[in-house]
Image (cartoon, rainbow, N blue to C red):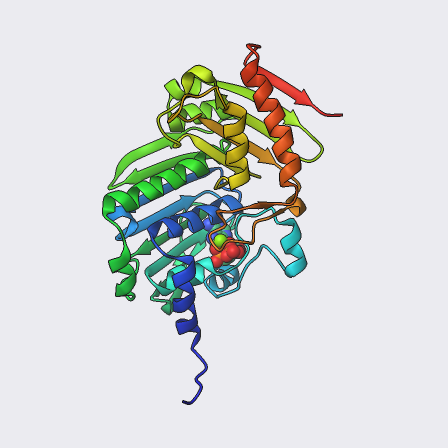
Length: 339
Ligand code: ADP
Ligand code: MG
């Protein structure tokens, strides 16, 4: 059989299969782009669980015409230059493939105005083709709009779950992102109705209250650990406030919500041993900040998993602090500083 070189369009469409499995992935990528652009205000609108419309509006840095045109090309990124940069990533995105992949499977539009420029630009594309760029006058920042997701990949469409499920996935993920970025105003609308809205704050507990509810926030205790290996800011329920499910367990690594690695779940449940009844679960939000060279975020395309170089060390630090805090009846706010 003769060998064909695939067109860029086809390559993007195939890649979209990895990056964009469902509307949730689109929302995540667009929101991460807004955060990477230092937005302090972010609005996410969806219709039909994101299948009909996903619109993310931010007040971030925006793009000029040249960057806007580059932004939907595959492996176009302003965030890294070469592989060595991967060792100290501070931005959420870095692969430079999200917009190219999303644009390949939707009717796509970006309206953007760079800070301190008088006017902006609008790029539109359909299935990654017919790319047009025209002048646009709007506020500083960026509005990215994704309509008719998967219109040209019917197999993807069929594989989606019910609107209720797809919407819940989006809401859960956005709640995580909002919890991780309390200094950013967040608003989410579905079918033009507000799902949640969280004011900018310098206080994590206020953000937890806005997103997960005041009643839950009130039950939380806090330990702050400043270890040379890692900083931990942990909000957790005490012995009497355990919950029926694991919904209130979050892990943030350098402001990125990620899944609990198995060893960390073990660490948490070992710390709570005898403190929570069987079939009950602690509520716990672990905010960590760690030297990016001591973790690997590149192990999963959706970046939901992070690998820590020193799992055992971190296990010990958290276990001791959490165990002591749960055993003692001390003041709920406990600060542990290591020299
Ligand atoms: P990555 O985020 O991995 O760099 P993307 O495909 O998500 O790749 O985005 C490509 C580029 O487009 C980004 O590197 C950034 O320069 C630009 N960009 C995308 N979204 C925004 C936004 N909301 N505000 C400013 N720039 C953006
Ligand atoms: Mg990105």
